[in-house]
Picture 1 (cartoon, one colour):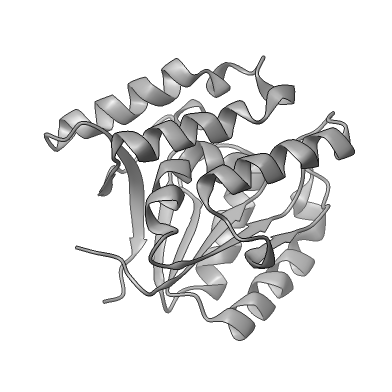
Picture 2: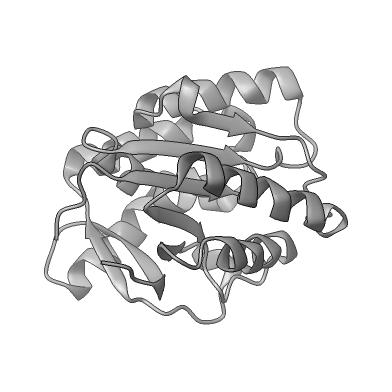
Length: 205
């Protein structure tokens, strides 16, 4: 199944979530689709100026176009206090851009902000394909429904994009060995070299 000429929206509760969960897929799809990136907050305890410089370097590696990137500054630890504003933001985005595919945290992600984003995205984007990306460190369980094969180039781009976040390198899940191991593990499940895996929340064909 090829995904071409689609409008794809990737939603990050915290800037870097999409890169971790779907960076290889973004790189693969960016050449033949319009990718929109919606970031709701920065990770806590980062210097804004330096972190945003890291983000834009990473975005360039993944093939994101600056005109398609929308960033906000909600409280990263308390998105719930802005739930109504986030719901309206999703609604307005849907009305303006009408995405065909939306990437969000998966439904079993235990992070409170990720849960909120998943729930509000389901409310707004219920008429299009909705995929939940995998962040294994936040999951007790995960529904591995959709496998997107990655080339070695896609995987290398994901690793390079994550390496751009120099301020985050002490966090365990930014280790490129973890990224590689998970891509290999998911690939082996369908007899491919590398994959990223998604929960199928809704499929609209």
